[in-house]
Length: 243
Length: 302
Ligand SMILES: Cc1cc2nc3c(=O)[nH]c(=O)nc-3n(C[C@H](O)[C@H](O)[C@H](O)COP(=O)(O)OP(=O)(O)OC[C@H]3O[C@@H](n4cnc5c(N)ncnc54)[C@H](O)[C@@H]3O)c2cc1C
Ligand SMILES: Cc1cc2nc3c(=O)[nH]c(=O)nc-3n(C[C@H](O)[C@H](O)[C@H](O)COP(=O)(O)O)c2cc1C
Ligand code: FES
Image (cartoon, chains in turn purple, orange):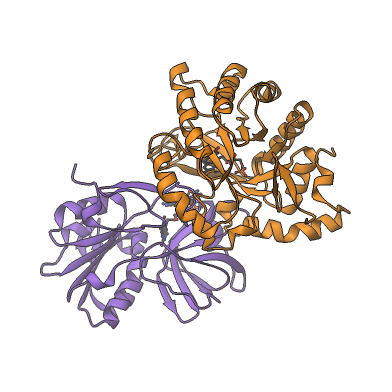
């Protein structure tokens, strides 16, 4: 965990309400795929947790959807503005479990953390497949970027691009391990449908993001865990989703 | 002795800055951010007789200049606090710590207090009387003079360490409750706990917190806290610890002028893990700016 005063180096709209932001001056940080950062947005009391989408040297990329005050203000920030950030939060995905043919499954703004994961798995020589789910063609982002690191399957709910339906309707066979991030209903559907081992990234409203307030507790099969600290990534075996 | 040092119920502390219960865990999380020995002390997470998972999530909501929480006293229970948390804390913190205690019956409070009173690392017992009294119909002990008196008296009878009564602001007359605690033998008073609040999710039209209501804290409550600390410290003859919205060295000075002998800092630690360190480091220069030689000189100046 580290505190840094980063500089906004670029903000770009990827779709109507999804933005990509680059932050420079992150310094020497040890950032793993699936971890998150917590941003202080001027004028707002609590920080905003956002997943790490990519790291290039001293520069961090995040992708976020505008859903409220904080993300709205964030999207309006200009290059050169300072942004206090807590880095290296959360556990991240376990790359050692990937096997040879890892499957990455993301929905909406659950997709960004999988990008840095795909890059790292590709570096390890793994045969990556990514299933990326969207509502409709106009909401697609990063599908071409993902192709640098593996095979990409796109789904849209209305069928306007790729496979019609949900990510759970387009799961390939023969994968060794899965890594998922997306809305809870999507994750629960995958939990039921997939018969390989894997990991899910969860989210919760956070007070601190670094383990101090017990705001983000989640009851797993191994007892109570903090999503910000022992999570956000959990092995499927520990999730209480059997009903 | 430094310019910031102060006496808290018979124990000298290097400075009056004390992270508030529930915002500092059992301390060691913050030891990753800075050397927590520079604090006066800190109040650890509200501890109960049995382990508690707390309320369903969402437990946290934001508002202008503050936050709501409905954590619901999640803690591992007093036995585990003694066998696991305190030994871990000992590795990183070498000063007496303030034990924050909660209960749902007088018996609970006494049971937990007695066990923590015996711990060498515990300096003070801060009794959070804002919890509902399950045997008394769910009304909080801290909302009636009788309930407050009963809990503090019972704990005082069984414990040797200084007992600090932590008051809820959700009452009509906080002064009379503070007086009841003093009469029951409290060695100090701390206030304020959170103010009951609520937010609604506009998308669902339903309460945002799973618990429906939650406790408001942060800068939004500061003027209320200053007012209550002022009123209570004028009325009682025991030290008062002021808290509620403190987030800067200036706030600390204001709280002490209102009558606080020491100051707790809560929500500010969540927004910025370095908050207390920054306050302690900037205090001397802010004291200089206002011509304050020793912090203890300004207590109750207002
Ligand atoms: C570990 C983690 C990683 C995340 N990664 C991403 C990401 O990569 N891209 C992305 O677009 N979003 C991500 N989110 C969700 C993102 O944090 C929220 O969308 C954002 O906080 C909303 O802020 P706001 O001020 O716009 O909304 P408001 O509704 O105005 O926010 C009010 C409060 O609620 C909190 N909040 C609201 N929605 C959420 C939510 N879904 N999850 C957690 N807190 C919420 C805010 O942080 C704030 O404290 C992530 C959440 C978590 C917990
Ligand atoms: C997340 C959170 C958890 C809290 N838990 C406790 C607790 O367990 N026991 C207690 O006495 N007070 C608890 N409090 C109240 C604080 O100790 C403090 O009284 C209150 O937040 C006002 O101070 P602040 O405005 O600086 O936060 C909690 C507050 C927050 C924000
Ligand atoms: S958000 Fe504070 S403990 Fe997780």
